[in-house]
Amino acid sequence: MKPSAEQLLSEIRSLPVGQARLMEVCGTHTMAIAEAGIRSLLPENVRLLSGPGCPVCVTPAELIDAVLALAMEKNVILASYGDMIRVPGSTPGDSLQRRRALGADVRVCYSPMDALDIARANPAKEVVFLGVGFETTAPGTAAAVLSAAARGLKNFSVWSMLKTVEPALRALMGMEGFNVQGFLCPGHVATILGEEGFRFLPEEYGMPAVIGGFEPEDILLAVCKLLRQIAGGAPKVENEYIRAVRPEGNPLARAAIARCFAPRTDLWRGLGEIPQSGLGLREEYAAFDAEKKFSVTVSGPAQTPCRCGEVITGRMDPPGCPLFGRRCTPEDPVGPCMVSSEGACAAWYKYQTL
Image (cartoon, rainbow, N blue to C red; front, side, top):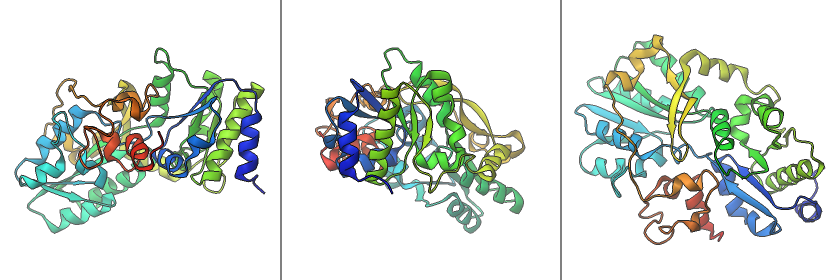
């Protein structure tokens, strides 16, 4: 039987860890922590920071600008998950939602397979699916590509913005001044990668790591386990989310990813270019690669007043941004962290965890 929240909080307060900064690397964790008010329950010496766990939030403004340009192409239907519709590019207020009002054909999908249905129903149009996400959504995007290839669907393509977690964590730990003592690892990604996907944290960096679920008790138990490791000086990977995560993860899902995609250098908001951190379509599926089909070009770094890059790298809490709650609100967002349902700024704003 799991200990109660009261028991966990009592132990958390008693552990001799000094100042402990812990980072969650999952947008769902970010929202769950805010909704449950977990930060307010922890002692002052234990801080929870939001990391690059929201796929919409790590997509840089210059890439959004390129997406907005593609949306205005004649005979193009752009299909995307809902959060991407309201993310602004480098120009405040300019988003796919605005482009749709200007005449672009932009549609919200709940899965990549919805985009395939749109392509079949519109044979005279080019349907581009924005493949955003981490290892969690990559298998579904791969399945859509494989299905399109099997059916000979020539008017369907994917713009892969898929990213992988390990290179981002390595880049974080290589940042000057990075100060975190443990990671609350993403439960959803871990269902694909398993425990093995995070062993590099303790083995190479001496960093405690716990894979956590999403209920308040899950998160408190994961925090407690991290603090036990810190107090004991024995970093390792622990799996608190055993009801969903197996040690080996999901080999079939990883095989689907490997079949369709190959690692490539990719651009992250707040982290810059990270080698081997993106997933590009393999050459045998080039016919379904929107970047090649439309000769997509991405301009140089876009200038934006948004401070999301600092928020998702643990350098700033959302209220530290001068725009937070003033110029930047969920109704009129300046950056993706205020748009996304998994964004740190949206979580802090909604639940007032100040």
